[in-house]
Length: 45
Figure (cartoon, rainbow, N blue to C red):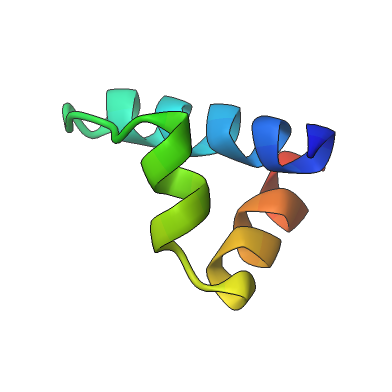
């Protein structure tokens, strides 16, 4: 779950950079596909 938290933090930073509102961690984890989560995880690493 820690990798998803890191991926979420990366997602939140991207949203902030573009002036977008981010979703909650719960929605991030439950509404993205496994491939999307993996991509955010790769970007966070």
